[in-house]
Amino acid sequence: QVQLVESGGGLVQAGGSLRLSCVASGSIFSVKAMGWYRQAPGKQRELVAVITTGGSTNYADSVKGRFTISRDNAKNTVYLQMNSLKPADTAVYYCGAGVIVTTSLPPYDYWGQGTQVTVSS
Image (tube, rainbow, N blue to C red; front, side, top):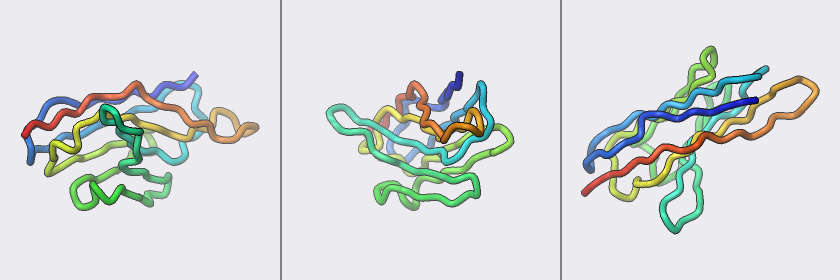
């Protein structure tokens, strides 16, 4: 059993900052890519940022220069530092990770329960 637990969401004014954290725990052999996704009301879930075990990153164009993804491999934790927040960033933010629970199986994608980020104007 693998769990991903996010924390750090909340209400912030436009221009403010928040830092999200996500910890993967349970029967984990290793964690591959980890990422953050978001879903606003009435919209599809979209990729925000992803990071590999080696530290390579990829960002959605809408957050480049404002958000920074990082990870601590020893703690199976991924972070999302969000600066210069805009009302358009309001969404439920989900953590996702590719997890290997045993070397006899390929990585499986796990998801957190989501954390609400609300940016007021």
